[in-house]
Length: 101
Image (cartoon, rainbow, N blue to C red; front, side, top):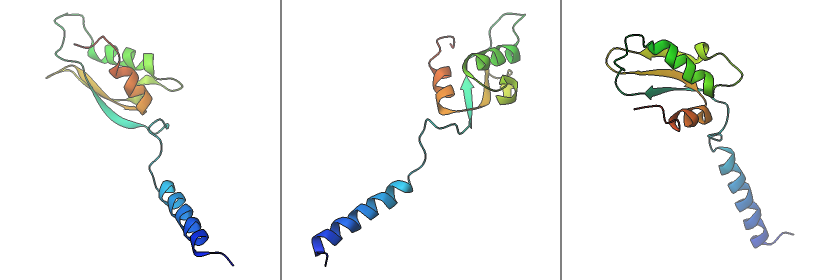
């Protein structure tokens, strides 16, 4: 017959496994979430196209799918920025870029 200390360890192991199974998935999974990318004020250039610039930024960091499908909205009146469906890793790549003011 199992001793009480053995049963205690088995119970503790089951409890730890159950607790770990309820933790959320890794932040590095492929789940896409809408992120807002703020890029400061709009440039003074007359020929500047915010939408085209936003798509080109997305094309640099997104792999395996269309940048235009990921783009949710381009902001071009009050500030320069966009919202897009990105994974955590893609958002981290964008935040690490030095092209934003």
